[in-house]
Image 1 (tube, rainbow, N blue to C red):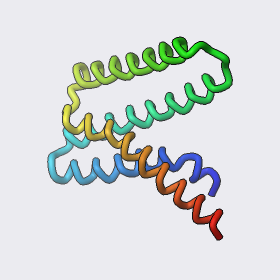
Image 2: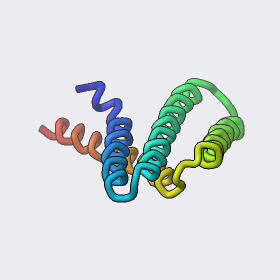
Image 3: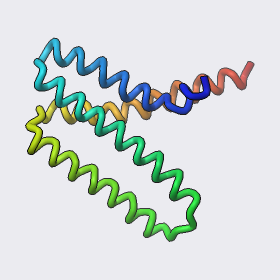
Image 4: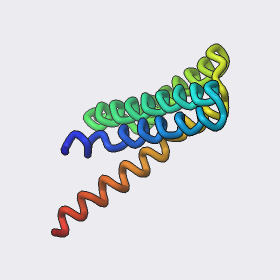
Length: 124
């Protein structure tokens, strides 16, 4: 159960991406669904990078400007990967952006449900 709590955001990102890819494939076609899957995977990788960087940078005593610079580098790498995926892989742009947006919904849903469950357990 502890693993599910730690990875609740990943479960929401990938689960929502799988559901939307199935629905998108049925409604809009395979090309859009493939774009959605690629965006979802990039969103999950972005979440993993945010978690990894957050853990590493919280242990360091760096200047705030250095931390901001590292996060700007991470965002630049994300934008570069997005440009490569959309230009060379010829993914459907709307499906890709919807897939990438599953990260935001996954963070919200995973955090809210995880925190609601832990506050219910504390209140008993």
